[in-house]
Amino acid sequence: MPPAMKGPVYSVQDVLAIIQYGESDFELDSDDSDASDRETEEDASEVDKENQQPTEITDCPDDDYEDIELQPKKPTMPRDRYRWLKRDFVSPNTDFSGPDVTSGDVSSHTPLEYFQRFVSEDMLQALTQNTNEYSFQKTGRSVKTNKKEIEKVIGIYLKMGLVQMSGVSMYWETALRYNQVSDVMSCNRFQELLRSLHFVNNLTVPEKTDKLWKLRPWLDSFREKCLQVVPEEHNSVDEMMIPFKGKFSGINSAWGFKLWVRSRISGVVCDFEVYQGNVNGHRAKSELGLSGDIVMKLASTLPEGQNYKIYADNYFTCIPLVVQLLRHGIHYVGTARQNLCRKLKRWDKATKTYIEVERPYIKGTYNKFMGGVDLLDSFAAEYKFYIKSKRWYLYIFWHTIVLAVINAWLLYKRDCKALKILPKEMLKRRQFLAELADSLILVKTTPIKPKRGQPSSAGGSPVTQTVTLRSPLNAHKRPSSDGSEPNGTPAKRPSAHPPVDVRRDTVAHLPMKTTRVCCRLCKTGYTNTLCRKCNVCLCFSEDKNCLWDYHT
Figure 1: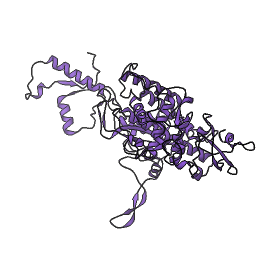
Figure 2: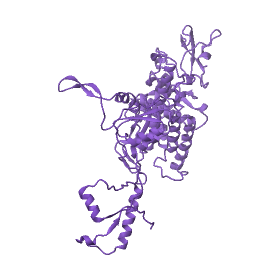
Figure 3: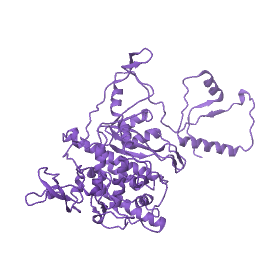
């Protein structure tokens, strides 16, 4: 046993007198650390081993008291080391020195290009490979899917979010058939791909200590894409829930999965972390606690010394957290249990008049920049379709797709404002979502005439992928059984313009003859030439070649 450190010696009588009369010159060191607790338990166990016989407590005379030596413990960081001082407040330098989010060349892109910033082709290719491997390991037969078919599945999911029904199969039913979904892929094929979606090879995972190991490669790739977004000066940290009823690695998810998110005030996700609960039944202790550790982890991806600001509620607020962030050059604003306040007018129901209540100036700043995660949560719940599944990780996967779409749309709005585009000319989120879904479904595909029965699931290059002639661009009327227009006449209402990505993919834009109508590009000439894929009538003559101009 290591030799004890020498310290002041007190008799038992002195200690009792100190406790009784409360002498202020005597101080006992306190230690809240886990190491000291373990040492105390070990010392106690050694004493118990030495004293096997039960002892009896009896009254002893004062002469029998023995002197004891108080053993000082290891120095720790006391919890009450912070004190409020009454002195004049000196405002620190909080001037932001980070990069501007709109610095550099700003240009507007297509919805598909914004979406691919967060869901790249490499991520989809890895998802395709793991899906084929998982289906073969599970059933002994591969689904033989490819990247383009996975893009169609995501596009169908986004279409379902725009026009929601109570079940997946309802989109293919005769009475409720929704052509923009049912004409892309058969119901059996769509559900087969949903059952086979996988993100990691189960046979190559070395250790399964991570509770999110089934989704970890996808989450890491998506988080890396989110970190590439230039952060704003003001960032909010809060929780977000993914609805899910079930059990996840011993966690009773009564409400769903919990995500800790750091976002901009506009709602753009910059960083996130999925809560996993205790590790092996134990939770690591720290001075900041769980909430403080979350803020420090989400703030660790911010550049230091550039006066970024983080806003959070009273669940995260504590003095050690503020001190730790300030050491990294990051300022913190959060609510607390008690506040020094100023005057603010509020309506009083009792007196039916406006009365003055106290509110600090910083509270107004907090209310202005805190709602980023709450705004993001409202965006996520607006056009999200819930597909029931027994596999918990699919709920998180579809939520990341929704977050990627929201980030893409918010970046599109930011660039449009930087380019001074009028708000009425910007795509609303519904229009942005519909154009993105059409691009995922139609880009690099060849339209074919529909036929009865389940389509072939054979793979191939993206150029050989097909969709029916009843594409989402021509679904305003229900077609006949042979794929022609009702009554053999073209629709009077002009078809919508396809997304720019579809127009310029240089695949299957073949001309075909139709009735003579006005050109959709120049709008001055009349033509009987129709683009088979885009479903748009364009001039194609010796004088005008709008068919070429439209697709370049």
